Image (cartoon, rainbow, N blue to C red; front, side):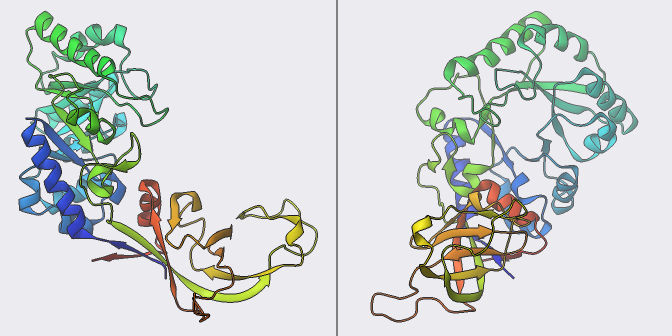
Length: 365
């Protein structure tokens, strides 16, 4: 089987470096583990006591993942990072200490669930800042807060926003300042203290280092930078974080010299994705390797082959074909053979897909 290698020490090193950064700037942060889909082995290896002590909470967007987080360490503070479905209110209160919310009806159900469980459930109200994903409309935030802050088993601990995830709206200072202003307005109008302005994610980290965020913004939700060492703002390495955290290896299951251009009538019946070819290559040949993964495992756009001389040919549900040229090293020896592995660097979504595939081995190194 193809395999995803996960470099635990590199990831732990990134998390500790980020904890030091947030401590320096007097900010809190939540480690967002959703890329791992609650994998128990990963959680056990990553969330050690020395790692957890520098983190405010650990978050995910799946209930199953939250359950596994609590199993890993029942004392660990957890945060559910998307507006929950109303039907799962009981489980949200049971497994999440904090949840992000934007629906009055859902918060009402969370209050009822918390009352049954004899708990006070903490929430962060999300505000829509232009990304057009989750969030209460800005004109409605005061009236919305007025409706929910009297729920006896709900404690509103902050306001938050989500930028850069759907349309890529950048988290500018002016955008983020709006959350701080609403926090001040609510605290003044209702005489209620809110502890968190949660507007930070991996995309906002460069702004933190440049002192380009409002002083009140004190909570970050970080996944990509911790696990991949990059910021999605420019897709480049952030600080000196390690980017050598995940590598994907596929096995060569066939290697033959074949024609470049397929023979026969090309129809729309193909279920795969293929690269374009030039008509002038109709009589040409090249060495093609078949690899043991396909579309069911990962989108080929989400993996980058490490050998820059290898070219994508096509991918179907369970196999991928690549062009390895003349298959010769500089001294004329065969470069690859059946049984060798081809190394790829996967993106965030690539890792997420590979971790969810039951046909890919997960190797912790």
